[in-house]
Image 1 (cartoon, rainbow, N blue to C red):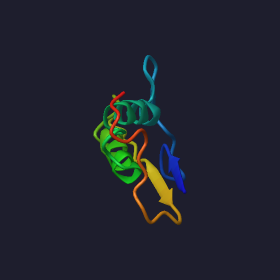
Image 2: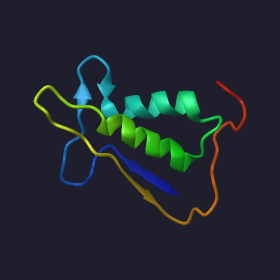
Image 3: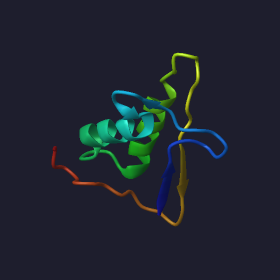
Image 4: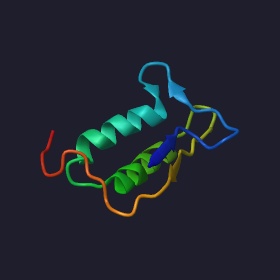
Length: 83
């Protein structure tokens, strides 16, 4: 099981007034582009990189968090079938 959080406990998730949540925007972009060839662990790593590369106008940053339980094999979404 994977549980993904937009940010670590004790901090707020950031959003853009026009495009919305940084985290969900990254999830949408990464999964759309890479889900056919990249397992879930790799997708979430890319999501983290996308979110952590952003800075708010005041210099704020966001760090997503993922908890992983009991998964020992790669999980693919739509393997080998580009969107």
